[in-house]
Each structure stands twice: as C-alpha cells, then as structure tokens.
Image (cartoon, rainbow, N blue to C red):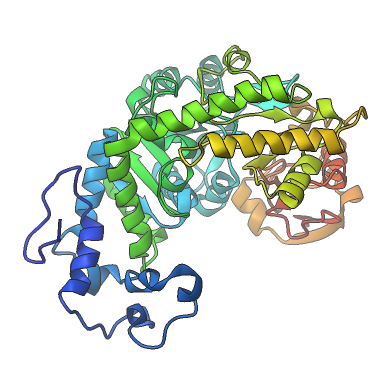
Length: 496
C-alpha cells in the first residue's frame, strides 16, 4: 500500500510502513534541503551508486523531517516496531541499525549498572565484554559446558546457574543462546531459576531470531516463548535484513521499559538509516508471510549437505545432530549450522578455509581452531550444496594428507582468574609487554579469536602460562585475532 501522509498505517502484518512512507516521500514530489548531502542522488550521482544503484541513494532518506515528521507524528517507526513485537510475541521491540552489538550494550545498560553484579555466560561474544566496559557492571561468570572431545564451549546448564545464584548476588542473568555453533540452552529452565529470584533473563539469541518469528519443527523454539525477559536477535543473520540490523524485544514486566528507552537513546544514532530500518520491517513482513517455506528450504538444504558429505566426502567428519543433542547443557540443535571437522583429512581449518576461498571461491561462515562451519540458509538450494560438496571433495583430493593436526589446549585449562572489573582494567594505566612476558599480568584489552568472537582473555583477567602458549600456537596455526591492539600478538596491552 502507499503510505497516506495524513493517516497512520493500519496495523497489519501485510504492511511495511517504513517502505510505504519512503515511497510516498518521493511520490509526493518532496524537495529536500536536509541531510543526507547527496539529496537522494538528485544532483551529481554519489560514487556508491556505481555499484549499489540509484535506488540506494533515492531511499537513503532522513527518518525525521523525511520519512516521518520532525516530531514523528505519523508514527512510522513506532508502527513498524509494534508490528515486529506482535509478530514475535513481545511487549515491545526496538530496532538497531548498529547490529546486535548495539542491542547487547543497551540490554546490559538496562539491567545492570556500575559496580552491580551481572551473571554472564563466559562464552559471551566480544560485544558483551564491551558492554561490561561501557556499563561498569561486575561480571559473575557462568561457565558454559565444555566438551573436551570436540574442544567446544556449548551451553550453560540450569543446575550450574542454580548453584551460582545460590552463592552470588546478581541483578540479572545474561546468556548467549543459541551459540555460534547452533546449540541452544534450556532457556525455559534458566528462566525458571531466574524468575524464582525475580531476576530478569536476557538472551543474546542473535543467531535465533527466525525461531521466534516463524517456528519450524526442526529448529529450536524462540527465546521469548520459553520465558526470556529481554531477547536480542540479528535480522541479517537468519532473516532477510541488511547487514547491521538487529532487534531488541521485551518479554515481561521484569524489564524497566523506561530505562530501556533511555539507554537506547544513549546508543542509537541520531542519523539512523532508513534503508536499514526498512529492511528490518521488510524482513518481518516476508517471514510472517513466507517464513515456513524459507526455513524449510534452509533445513532441507542443510540435511542434503549432511547426507552428501557422508557418502561423497567421508574423510571429513560432520558432527551429528544427535551427537550434539546428547551433550550436557544442549537442549536443542539448529541443523543449518553444519560443523565439519577437517583434521581427519590432515588439514587445519585455516588451510581448508583459505583453499576453498582462493581455489574454489567458496566462503564459509566460521573457521575455528579445528573445524569449518558453512551456514546454510534459505539462499542455498541444490546447486549451491552441490558446488560446496564438490569443493570439499576437491579439497581433500588435492590437499588432504595423513599428517596429524595439532590439538589446542582444552577449555578448562584456558580459564583464568578475574581480578579487576573489565571497565577498571580497560581504563587503567597500560603497559605493553611481549607475549612471552605476559604470564601473571592483567589484560587491559580483549583478545578475541575471530570467528567465533568469544574472547580468550577479557580485560581484568590474568594471563597464565597456558594462555600465553595457546595464543602463540593459535597465531602460528593461522588464526586471526580481533580486539587486541597488536593482532599479531607479538605484544599485549596489560595493566601497568
């Protein structure tokens, strides 16, 4: 429909109020003397139109005194948020155009503050660690279940949270689920433990927004449905939104929505992108309408990949869904995250990742210290799966060997002591030391193998000899680090 500038749009899941208002802006013959400077491409064409097209400039509009009035009288964004909230069963939904990183920061600022204890699962993404620096909260780490055989951090267990809260003060609990690897925690059980103490449960379910928007029998259930009080979802990860789009949804009255709004105002851009917002709105409408079909295509393609790898590339080990479901702490598994072990073919994951990209022009979502993970979505059908399988077959035939691939230290051995809050350590007077001299020193930076983006060392944690050895081996094997001032890790930033 065309947005009527004199009326509010009807509240229907068939509507896309932001896109409707954007079209109506131009159809009304509006002449802008406002930002952005390129004026929608009205004058000399912006350089980016050479690759993004004229429409990208045309619809790069200001939200205030543009798509909406300066006082948001038409409620364009408010209506889009309400439609999204209704679609996922939330009391309220906010839109982020700076990814789930912004949503994480807002959530942490909302539920905890300077010096206040926040229970946080230690397999948290670096955005959570940055949130600790911004909020000044004192983390009480909830250890995820670590599988020694797979060398993989899975999900925190309900009993572990119960024990932790029995012995620790907390303002809120925040867990990451599903994990990057597609495993989900028992959110309902975690929520029961939190709610028994009148604590809010925040879930960083950036990888699981599709679960709650349009459930699929072969995928986990959504976090809000299971009792999460505040849930974070990345629209670009599993839906059809543009990169950097995310939503933050309120599930209960345990969340102070006034404080949430104030914290969101602190973090939100004052020049929010209408293009990004419209893609959130469009993704919601598309998945309400076609989500079951889209997710079925993704699930079918993932199952096809598993079947074909088992028969055509048996040298590679694909971690089975049933195997993962039986792991402690794992309540459900997302079949679209396909974990492929490369070591049985004598290849490190980094060798495999580089070869596939350079020689077969195939890119995968994740390459950690021992596996690659292609993320299968609705964008992939039989032709894409066939190309990936043939690429992996060629990889083994041309690069495979019987050499042993070195194993890294296990998760328990890499855990260390937290002696300062992340905020205090981050802002403390720093000193730079060599990697070899870091043992016993307190980190003043995030050291984050990426992907998956989980810091090995966070500000305020102490380097151990084993951590120093692990980081050296990781870099030597071809790993990549984010967050550290020196990504080569020849030097580290520590508290003076």
